[in-house]
Length: 164
Image (tube, rainbow, N blue to C red):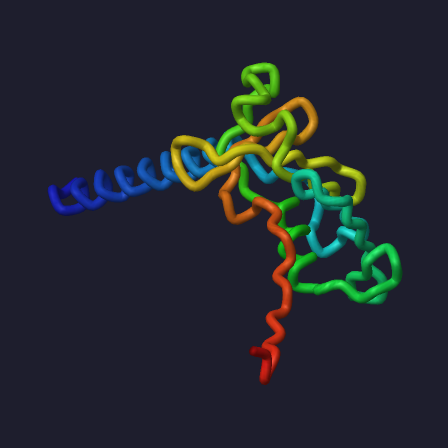
């Protein structure tokens, strides 16, 4: 075998080994990924219940592709879609709820309680490590991006002309 052919063969073997290692690492990362808060498709959710602090509980239902308050008034579809997006929120880390003092991480009482098709998510305080918050889902606590923390709906600003 000539020197050039041997070099090409070793180069091809090296590339094949690197590809195999990259595929193995990708599978390992996918297996170890913490996943999302709930195993629900946000678009398939039809019932939402939200309690922010001490405020009254707000209940919503999805009918004919739109969100409605439980009293029959039309709700803001974009606001409810933001709330249901929490189901697919990527989890940065899962821990057992017993690993925490729930009062110290804002879960006793929670800042917000969001129920999506009967699955309860309790949102606690912001973490000290960045723009993340604690979320209790069953017997586990997750760290998720702060953007999934439920907020009060935006009120439309009505300008009063001629008011003095």
